[in-house]
Image (cartoon, rainbow, N blue to C red; front, side, top):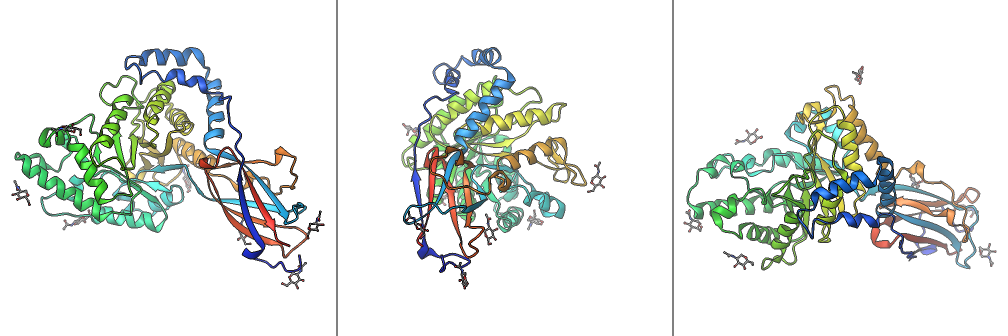
Length: 458
Ligand SMILES: *[C@@H]1O[C@H](CO)[C@@H](O)[C@H](O)[C@H]1NC(C)=O
Ligand SMILES: *[C@@H]1O[C@H](CO)[C@@H](O)[C@H](O)[C@H]1NC(C)=O
Ligand SMILES: *[C@@H]1O[C@H](CO)[C@@H](O)[C@H](O)[C@H]1NC(C)=O
Ligand SMILES: *[C@@H]1O[C@H](CO)[C@@H](O)[C@H](O)[C@H]1NC(C)=O
Ligand SMILES: *[C@@H]1O[C@H](CO)[C@@H](O)[C@H](O)[C@H]1NC(C)=O
Ligand SMILES: *[C@@H]1O[C@H](CO)[C@@H](O)[C@H](O)[C@H]1NC(C)=O
Ligand SMILES: *[C@@H]1O[C@H](CO)[C@@H](O)[C@H](O)[C@H]1NC(C)=O
């Protein structure tokens, strides 16, 4: 060991990651597929509701959620530190720190963040992804025809970039006739509408190319059809095509409301949203689009129907594309904090869901449904829920046993880690010079169990 020094010695170390797959055949939740009735029968929603009430108690439901979370958000990892003659390095100490979680619980923001230092601090200390409520919308950036103004959006993007916060773009276009810039609403000539719309797409997408994690392209194009009426039945598909050509790497979302939050919905049902995504991807030239589905999640102030949510997410997830909850909120009500927590846990336990953005903020932000902190930035009850889940969904360093005795036989030495990026230090209490660090990526692609071998070339 005499050549070891503090620090990193690439020549003395190599890292071997073995994938040890042990299939999880006995899926404790496989009967949830019995809830997946909607794809075959659009009228089956009522029976889904009944099924949930009869079959599961709250406690059982929670237990199943936890089992799913363990399975879909974490991997078992085993560390083995050996000499190159395969003998274990006795008493090696391994410490880990998650530098980046892969599942993101983010929060929308609005222009008031530019005016409030407190809002900025509150935000940056919590969230790693955001979207802007109105600042990127057409009616904000081009209030007057031909006079584009991206000042607010640019400043917010700068704040996000400076604080390592990812930004999801919302929205290139909006299919609601009442949500066009007022001067657009007054245009009668379809060719003119076409011209100004193409200009809008080009302008906003070129401006933010490479800077966003995703874009809502034609927001709410199941509920509304402004562009289809003006420009023909394939208008949305053509706009997704243009968006793809302008920024081929960015994820392009279909984004709708009532899809997971309202069992009585008839327009943007899970099946119809899924079909819309398929229709867009099937359009000529769109086959390579990185598609994703956004379910806004504007819930009513009543007990959420978790069984319906799960079946809805099953349907949306059946395309194999990422599903995001993009605008989660609920009006204030006595059980708001409890309901919000139930919704978030349900979403987190669904394998198709890759991230969540809540429509919320401190009082100064003006988000008046989910108010997470009061005017002095004291945390509210709903704020506590969000902070608790943010903590729970990040791997805490203190969670990880600090010392793993290297013992090839003992399965209890496996550690269960949330997906993410980690910094790992390997050291030894007696051999002061023995110390090295490495970066580890824990992903679902690596299978349920991986072995990380650190071989010391002594
Ligand atoms: C530790 O490193 C120092 C120099 O950095 C060296 O003098 C010493 O022999 C080393 N000790 C061991 C146990 O390798
Ligand atoms: C393996 O190598 C280590 C370090 O060089 C040494 O201490 C140990 O005795 C070796 N074990 C065997 C079985 O050769
Ligand atoms: C690894 O060691 C470095 C240098 O001593 C330290 O700054 C860092 O916090 C350690 N990381 C972990 C995960 O223990
Ligand atoms: C552009 O927008 C910013 C912020 O919203 C505003 O302060 C500014 O006056 C606008 N500029 C023009 C020329 O309207
Ligand atoms: C639309 O744009 C085309 C090409 O720039 C132009 O020739 C045409 O006159 C425009 N149509 C209207 C109605 O402004
Ligand atoms: C719309 O797109 C579909 C699928 O590509 C195509 O079959 C159909 O002819 C198009 N309709 C119009 C009016 O362009
Ligand atoms: C809010 O926080 C401040 C300090 O940050 C404290 O003095 C005050 O008592 C708190 N108010 C409430 C209502 O908890």
